[in-house]
Length: 482
Image 1 (cartoon, helix red, strand yellow):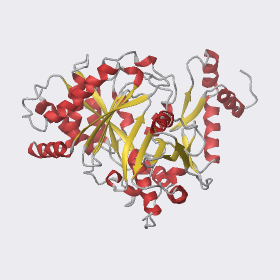
Image 2 (image 1 turned 90 degrees about the vertical axis):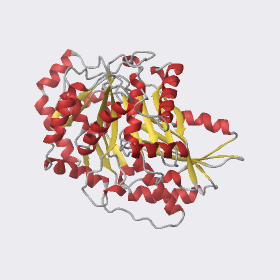
Image 3 (image 1 turned 45 degrees about the horizontal axis):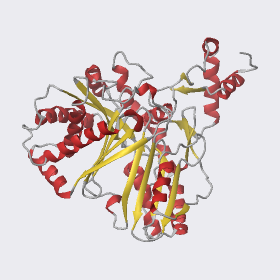
Image 4 (image 1 turned 120 degrees about the vertical axis):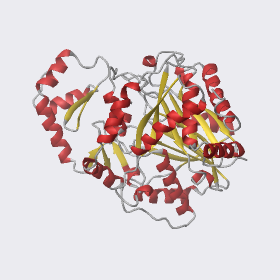
């Protein structure tokens, strides 16, 4: 390979789809299988120091850009099809049905104010592992779509709920309002989760509707960019030795690449679609489950997590199962941090073995681990698997996820002017994500799954078993439930 200087070398790799970037001073690259020849790798090795110096120079020239968080980096890497279950983005799609007709022009005005106030909505993400908040962006016009029938609207959902946003191009979200004669208006909102998590999206929507109704919004003066730039210094001052010791002691208990009844190997699944199974405990059943939680001195989150693990264990060929538990981790860097819009996702892991004789025993084991997850919630979960021996990096190590957001119905979903009628998440290197909420007083139980990974009948049976178990726990003695 011939080149005039290091910058030209980096550009030549980029033109062939090979991305080079720095991660804490170390040179990283991302390329499709077969892109890098032995000669290419030798060139990178020979010029490593010069490449690092050139990339550091580029980073310093763009003083406004800053590194992605560990979880944002994992989302970015997941776009690469060389990984199992890769070739897709981390994406969330939401539909809100309105009780009255929407004034789209006024809503657009409100949304543009939110964009100016919440800097995460002005983020662009780059392939080199950095991000930047744009100081100015064009006025955003909420798209208005009219359909002839409700069925047409549902068909269009299948396009909108799988959109992939182009890197380095703003915006990383889309908002639409759809109309169908004789039907209620629907607000469609989707975004790449690299810019914000689902909880932050609800904050932004709540802000928008307050403005829409001419109500005052208390805007945080602290920004997501300030948070991101302060995290490293904050963490450098923390003592994570206890958290690290805990996860080192647990690492080899973690069950990677779980053996569930997949329809095809996960290594063969890329650029795939997700779908959702929907269920719920009604208000009375959920109240009964909360009452049982108090009786057994535990939490609904622990019950739900244990029921999920117990159900999947029955279908697993392994003697134990580990799930990836989503943790929303807003470090206390500002008193306003809970009002900031951005991505504050962290991860941790829960493991259950088949040795537990009944549900109560399983619950006690899971609850014990969950207390440790709460205690060490600030520890970077992406580091945990580094303590595990014998990992195969390109494989889907922890493809089973639980995202449990319980707030007793205090969220936007309880707003009388709107109700959530549909949502779907998709995440690279994830085969099954259990989304649990109680925003409307019920316990909504949803499984977002990679469509090619399961036979429909098998997954439906697993899902129904889980729902039946949750309902059984509202009435039966937990020592008698297996």
